[in-house]
Image (cartoon, rainbow, N blue to C red; front, side, top):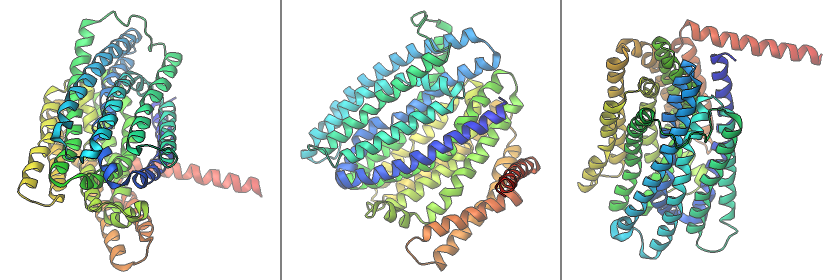
Length: 514
């Protein structure tokens, strides 16, 4: 199958997955919030969230395995692919053990008066923490398997596992209404068990399907390769920890100053952002292996071209839904949750704005990783992101409103984007004007038109489900302006070809029915 066709097929598979999992996850969140209440839901997002969000580290560390597997696939070196897998698996066993021990040690200090949790809920929070810290090990062990699946561009099995996880989360949400006992503890334990199910599904499939996924030679350490993997995974992990530390650190700082109810609002905002981010993350996951393989094959021009496509369409896919959501967030949350925690709307709007900034250079992150030398990049960008924490602490210490913390979040995301552009120019030879011409400029007018349509809808329309009309009108305006002003001739030709295929299929179906 041609690379372009495989990208299109995998994108379709993952978008089908997304339509199912996003709807299921949003409904499950509503059930969980109602079952636990705002206080326990806030505690779960604060305590269990410290560990649950390590699933983001899974994706970050999987990039290391996937990068080297894709790189050697580009070089057509099967022996090195086997060595990459076995050494990566051994490395992640060690990483998982170290992280679990670190979490348990940290837990001693977190629950010794550091976190702002009511005394009668400390024991429940600690129980959840212990159960989930153990399952972090299984999450990390699954990294080489998910990396292998992505490197082989097998998005079907990735999508299937994600759908099973979403369905199990929905089942857990329903069980909260049936089971007796402490619902926070029950929810924490059942949620933690999902990582074991996912690992088994990934591992069994990979061992059966791919010859490079083997335990043969597991303890035959290739010193040079393990150093490369450790360095790449370590610096990639550093960047992921900075991003994760920023996200969860803000939750802790908000908790220290404002309590668990604000954590519930922040947790809802994080949920909304992560669900909408699936649109662009899906595209990046399908293009990422091709970016790595192009670099492995020595085709730098194709690698840069793909990274710009990832950034452009990553922003488009998020903006298409994200812009109307920003304007209609309050109505959406009321429809979704009935009685959302206070400040949820403002938090969601600001986090979505920061995510949109991030998407402008999301492809460049993969391009820099494809090159391999990421130490300086991760240090500078990771430091920028983690600076959110002292800034947030200082703002709240001065008595500023909570939304100032999220405003600083947006500002640091914008600065990080500029930093990525400078790195791409220095390390990869990407000209800044080329990037602006092909990625930034084509999206300015469509985004502006979408905002104008949303504002007009808010001023002119007044009814309960206005957000549906706003979203449809905004999407129409955004897509039409993209076709007229945002796409180049080759992209227009692709869309015309797809339209002709759809029209011919429709004509064929109509003639057959007659």
